[in-house]
Amino acid sequence: MTENNSNNIDNTTDTKNQSTSAGKLTWSEAFMASPGPKTWLAAILLFVKGLCMGVADIIPGVSGGTIAFITGIYENLIKAIASFDWQFIKDLLCLRWRVGLSRVHLRFIVLTFSGVSIAIFSSASMMHYLMDNFPVLTWSAFFGLIAGSIVVVYWEVKKWTVLRVILLIIGAIAAWLICGLIPVQTPTDLWFIFVCGVIGICAMILPGLSGSFLLLILGKYYYITGALKLVIASAKSALHFEFAEAYRLLADTGAFWALVFFQLGQLSGIVGFSRFLKWLLAKCHEGTMCVLAGLMIGAMRKIWPWKHALEQTMQKVEEVKTVDGVEKTELVDKIKTLADQIVLPWDYGKEFTVKVHQIKDGIDTAIVEKTVSGLNPHIGTAIAIMVVSFIIIMVLERLANKPEEEKTVA
Image (cartoon, rainbow, N blue to C red):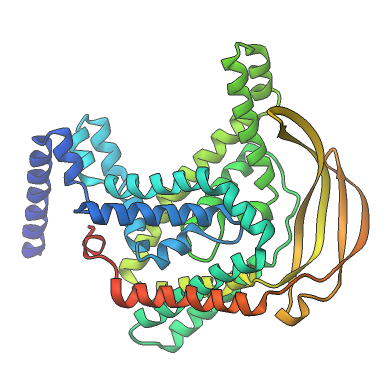
């Protein structure tokens, strides 16, 4: 007991000394004292990995957490998010700002999420183009990358026991079932929007699960993106001094409060869940890795390149197009897939029937069945892309083997 008390006193003294030392630092020194990359090369690599995460977040069914896992920064990402704890808030409230800055993993967060943000805004149109025009080949690339990452996890688990195999299977079954769910109608109450924010952000930092895909299942993906568009439209109206219209867009539609509660849910979810994951990785590292690997295995259902649509929605939407420098608004058919079916590559070219729900003013007005001609499966090219993507992960694991600067992030 005396020894424990002595250790506690020593730890308290060390903490006070660190706080005093950090308090004497300049802002620049406090920022550089925070955990993160130690060299310019490590910083650039971390930024590039953030870019890859952002590209993945654009695609429904692919998680940024999966890319973080593939690129070897997953555990450091969880630690960095969890570093924004109550002690940090206490430092802020007590005006110990430089002390708080030196403790949190701000450099890691800034570099990673700068990459994520830039990728989302800059590559969204490119990824949508690839998904619309080359779906089989694009999904094949992600399939190979994730298959490779599963093998990497297998190597990291030093000893496979019956319990760890069971955890792997549980994770795989959970992800497989989730990826097969059909979007449902849900309430628009603010409490439910808050819950959607929590679920969406937790899924984003879990390998194998896509936050945007879960929002789609919960029936709130288009509601949230629609609210964001209304807020942007309101801001544009305010810039043109159309304050009445700006207020109407926010107040009458409820878009502002929907986004506020969604962001509050995301903030609560990422702070709480990241700390839980950090605890799991510290206390039960290999068991947690088995569950995460299982989630990625189950998510292969969504990433499988060859799928036939079973059920879709179709509605007329306004789309602004620029023709000869003049913006024109046209009505176009917007099609969204509700359910699909995995098929073998050689069956992808066969005809199939799709049930289409025709939507008007948010109401399902009619259901029709249409026959769709088979598509080119690109079997040889797709398999080649899978193999190349798989080999890339193997090479990165064997040769790069995670930069030392990232491994030592506290």
